Length: 168
Image 1 (cartoon, rainbow, N blue to C red):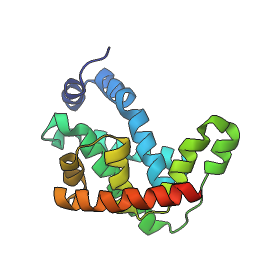
Image 2 (cartoon, rainbow, N blue to C red):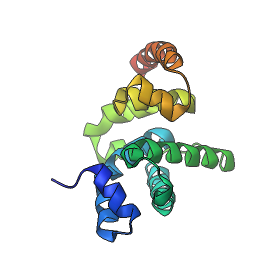
Image 3 (spheres, rainbow, N blue to C red):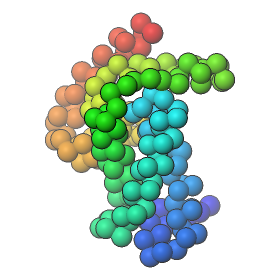
């Protein structure tokens, strides 16, 4: 088992190249999954994850709370994605190719396709709470909204998700 995430962040911030590699390995699957949900496109998700890691690792010394690394990584990723949307208004997707390559992922792809029908803020909230298991407070902190807003929006979003998913 590897070092705790907080320890990896501290060591990476201090310039330990091995800790940087371990930190990436420890978080890359979660980040890619988050990026895939945001983008709906494998290639764009890979690019977004790479850009997010580059930005976060370059600014790692500015992170005040190493234990908040994942929240910070997701926040940075979300902002980078918003910037990409503003620059590129295309919404092409590689999800059909992914299904063809690996039919057992069809359910996962159906979830991603359903999520893509939601506005980015709503999609991020669903991902953080229902896929990444963030508490309402943690999701509220990441998104910069109140816990009550999280509760209210999740109630509405979960109902809408079930309706859209059942039609897929």
